[in-house]
Length: 363
Image (cartoon, rainbow, N blue to C red):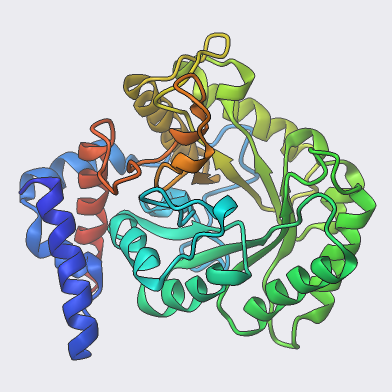
């Protein structure tokens, strides 16, 4: 079965079953569709046994039931993926409206291989994503509100309230205040700490989900790490000029550095990836081959050391690109038309097969 046939079958089944009320988990359908040979390949290459964690891990891999919000990559091949809805030329800077079928289209693409999405907005059209992703696709959600430069106190308050409401409605599993706001110099560390405390204080009794922010390694001072329940870091070897081959080693070095100041708290790499097109940055040269290699190295690191990575990103966002040398529009697993890129086709089939087998064995 070709991958496009596989995706069409998944999407078709999801829509039909939703109409009839008989919803089968996508993984169960995958088991019936994928051939055993793909399963064997996937289990061998993309479901490796956990090796000795060395100094990076504080102890053994987390048990599968370590907590509702936690994820243990050592125990599952499923991906965590950054989610943006601006496919097929949609552009938020023009105010383009995103309809629910766009959310479902992208979720249909990634749900066979992913159990987690990370988001960057909680208002406007994106406010409707969470119920769809959680209730229809059973996604674990790392929800982030956007804090833009120059936001008024009213705008900031609205963002924090919307983020808190998602937590109180059990529509998110981790709540993040802003993305790289300290790194960009748009908000001070003290402001972000105050906003984190506001969201945490707004959660109802019995709602025990972590609150933090997502920022760069340099932004995480002792005060900021102390204020966060979970340490979420954005880190791109590409932007550091690192050869794709050394992606895993670079992520390992960064995580070791962050772990030293994390006070034993969970670390999630909320963004990393490698562009398949654009200008070289030092030894980091975009291209399909290097994008695949960087993914493989990052994925291997994540599973070996039990560190969650949210890969950037689900689909290319063409609106970000300014020309052929600009890599910003070329980070997705799928292109702007929703077609999987050749670099990832067999990888996704393999991961899907491993998840399908697990689902079949637990039924």
